[in-house]
Image 1 (cartoon, one colour):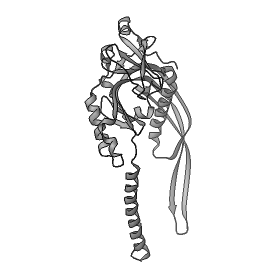
Image 2 (cartoon, rainbow, N blue to C red):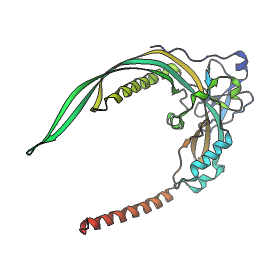
Image 3 (cartoon, rainbow, N blue to C red):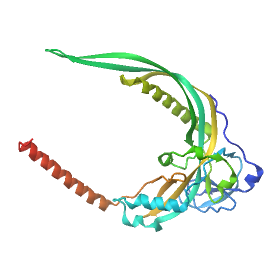
Image 4 (cartoon, rainbow, N blue to C red):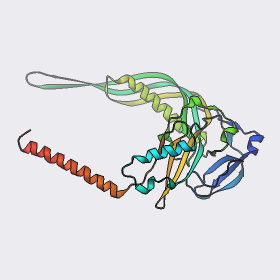
Length: 309
C-alpha cells in the first residue's frame, strides 16, 4: 500500500529566516531561526558550523510546543540524580551540565485502517484421576479470528541521531496538544533535521500495525493455552502520513572525559539518561547485600538442618 505524502513545501518567507547547522563530528544537521545561535551539537556536544539556508525539506504539519522551560529541565535532572545511591558524588554537582538545549525532534505519524484474519493454534488440557491413575487429555485446535481496526498517529522517529531507545523511554507525547505548525514556534529552539524519510520508515509502521492486529485478536483466545499464530492475512488501507515535531530538552554532561546525554520530554517532564557508576559505592552496597543474604541463608540452613522446619 502507498502511504499518502506527509508535509508540504516551506514558503519563501519562512525559508529566508531559517539556518542549517552541521556537526563536524557526528554529521547531524539542525535547523534554527536566524535569531537563535547554535554552536554545539545537542547530541554529541561537538562544534557545529552554519551550512546555509534551509532548502529541500518538507514543512511539518504539526508541532507540540514546549510546555516546560530550561529551569524545569534542570530541576528534573537534579531530582533524577539526587537519590541515586551508586552515582559518583562529584557527578551530582550542577557544573557538570555542559549545555541544555531545547530541540524539536522529527516524527512521522502514520494513520491507517486495517482489516484481516489470523489463524492461531491452541490447546486445551483436561486433568482427572481415578483410584489407579492420573489422566491428562490435550486437545488441539485451529482458532480463526477476523477483525478490523483504525490506527491513528503511530509515531516513528525520523532522526537517526536521536537514539530510539532514548526517545521511546520519554514517551508518550500527548498529541491532543499539537497545533498546526508555524515557524514562530521554533524561536529560541533548535529543530533536528530529519534524515530518515517516511518511505524508509513505512516498513516499521506496517509492522506495528500488523503486530497490534495479531495481539488484539489473540486477546480473544484466552481460554486456550500455547496460542501461536499459524497464518495471517492483514490488509492496510487508507494510509496517511503526517510530519510532526516533538519537544525534547537535551542535557549534555561530562564526567572524567566521558559524555553523558539525558533527554527530557518537553511536554510531560519525563527524563531519562545513562549514569556513571561509583564502583566503590557499588561494592560497598554489594557487600552489605551479600552479608544480608548470607545471614538469611545461614538462618534458613539452621532451621532446615536443625530440624526446626
